[in-house]
Amino acid sequence: MRLIKATKQSRDDGIASLPSVARNDNIMFTIREILKAIDGKLMQGSINAYVNGVAIDSRAIEPNELFIAIKGENFDGHDFVRKVVARGVRVVVVHRPVKVSNRKVAVIRVEDTVKALGYLALFHRSRFDIPVIGITGSAGKTTTKEMIAAVLKTRLNVLSNVGTQNNHIGVPLTLLRLKKQHQAAVIEMGTNQPGDIPWLAKVARPTMAVLTNIGESHLEKLKNLAGIFQEKLTLAKAIGHDGCIIYNADDQYLKTIPHQKLSARLIAYSLRERSSNRATNVNIRHSDGLSFKVNKKSFFLKTFSVDMTYNALAAIACANILKISDKNVSQALKTFRFEKGRQEIFKKRGVWIINDSYNANPVSMRSAINALDAFPTDKRRIFICADMLELGRQSQRLHQEVGERVASSKIDVLMTLGDGARLIMRRAQCLRPQLVVLHFSHVEDLQHYVHVLCRENDVVLVKGSRRMKMENVVEFLMST
Image (cartoon, rainbow, N blue to C red; front, side, top):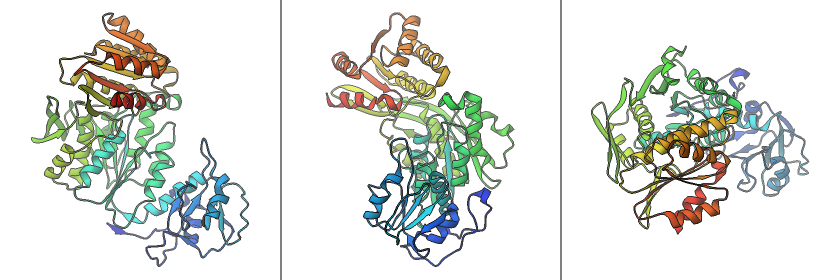
């Protein structure tokens, strides 16, 4: 990795002509650099100041950091400008007038502070000549990101998003954490409306793209699968001819990538279709996990979800490109531990608990059911699921389709929570009348009943959209 100077760019590329400066480790940006990068206007204060960091949280900001006032759903950063100034902050960026009585404080005005955050991150990212891997898809983004980072960290110093900081706020904040010691960056990119991925790709300037799958998610604004595919495809289109596009060849939309007008090198991975990174000999090992082979090399994951093999294949493909040894890759995957709420497996007081509660859409619901089916047990499989949100007009149909999948599964007991999940329950019961089904309107009632219901060696999987707070059910199971 080498630190490089920003070069002259057009405004369409997000940065203007930026001066290089002699700097020490305490200087991240000078005021002149900030003004150029974000097309800002200095309303007061000295142009000769500098900052050593960037923050948007007034509670955690340090005196020598730049405060960017972001207006969110619940709070407006402009309301906290006086607070951060009182804490010693001397440079702030705003998009509406604010009164700062201390004339030594530099106040920079822009049209949009969210865009300004992105442009500043773009300028900072442009200083680094390192591999930047952008990851998008309808499901599995965070786990794929974590697996890729884990594999690359066996040899490289890697920056990646914290948790799911994958939006127009989280991605710039992640890029602004780039330091001289970083040798690669792994950046998850999410979307819930058209235009999100093109903007994030513009800010991050990825050199490699990973596309996991195309499924029914965020349909309120993306409308349909074709719309989701076109939005995700913009990440691949952002990769230059000297970059790589890594994609799931088993996905009905992504397998058309070779027919798109893309200039980068294409690398496929799969379980079914032919590809250079195809998993074979996938086997579930009793109460242990699953093993598989890629090009005759063996790998192991501590999960019973075969779908998680796709995430590992993406990581293996990235490792091959960046010359990570098979031995390092194998060890990283073998010791990989899934993020909280994503296929975590526990055994508490004789009951197996699979915590897949972080979020849910039809793709991840099907994957969860597949994992529960694959779990090696001769006892009951209990599926606790809640509503899938942000599905727009197709919500009813998609919930019913999950019910159809439940009916054809090995699930013995179905427990549902919420209006959408009620449709899952009704459809499953209609198709398999002998299935034990229980529906609840309140999580407390569900928790009480599951506490009474569970028997030794039962397997319980918990799933639901983020706002349904199904992690509370998991916490209850773990503590009772």
